Length: 436
Image (cartoon, rainbow, N blue to C red; front, top):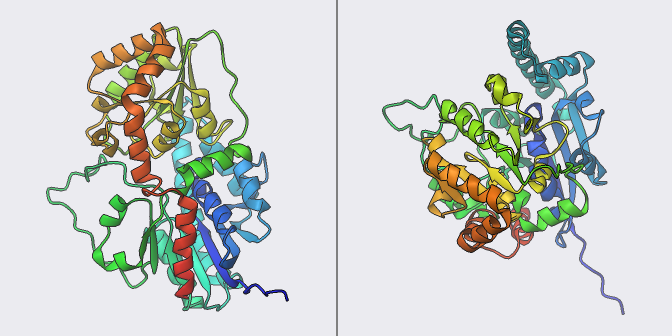
């Protein structure tokens, strides 16, 4: 006699993909492992829908492997916010780089127009077209990677159509700094208190770490889960490599002894830019070093010309030519001033260097003694001299001094002190699903 397996419960998950107007595919990078891992559930049968809040034409030319992989899921129905060749050309122009002051001023005006136009399109879509993609199912989850004003507004529009739907906030990163006045604009004499959430608040929150969980208001902890950070966990990094999701490799120039990747900081952070330029000047003064500046925020536009013209200095935009992951694979040493990409190059055992004298922010990684934390330019000189003298010896020294600390940091902030982030996710969604 054959035993009949219990049918899986159907759950529809609706993704909001918001940040595609920014450089790279940040939201997609975080959503891909969620879909892949949830598809391995033995308890629920997930059907995915999503709205990518972007121009469809931006994804039809030179399709990124990660985007192709997203489109390959048979149980995912993905819609775009709009389709406009005019907006496509505007985005191409404002994303290009020019040395002309007049052209750059014109780009600022166009950027302002582009943002306003995009907001108008979003509001129109949410008011008139959103209801086409939503049903009134009681087993519908809405997932976003943010709890900002934009996400809350979209969720409010969603819940007007389906009041039974539950909102889940998935981790898009984790807290990297230990201080609160992180940005140039943070000059308030009194610490800003966390305001109470408005009526449209998340029903469930997935946290990357216990540190993130403790940062929440107590009222949300009962519906919160610590799952880890899927994008940077070892399980997903191996799968990304297997599926070739990071794109083409970067050719290595054997004329250099050391390959250095510098993840340029964002402009709004507390960064001492004059010293940043001096640091780049010093690193690139070594003829044995091949240096790539990974520019997230067009800081290259204000770099001195003599640095840009150096034969061993290259600039790469995160959204063009090569993925950040492939740039990390290419490198021997990675400089950073605070970024969640730190987890990936630590996992890949790259030499991590934080010139802490470039910022007045305090990174949590410092407390864990993760990689080199340089206090001054003297220490920068020491590590550069060691690298060009013998990269092999520097790697051996780095492994002896830092690998244990690095693994502890990854375990706390990526793996949620567990054996499997995938298992954590499946357990969390199992509990959420049973509450629907």
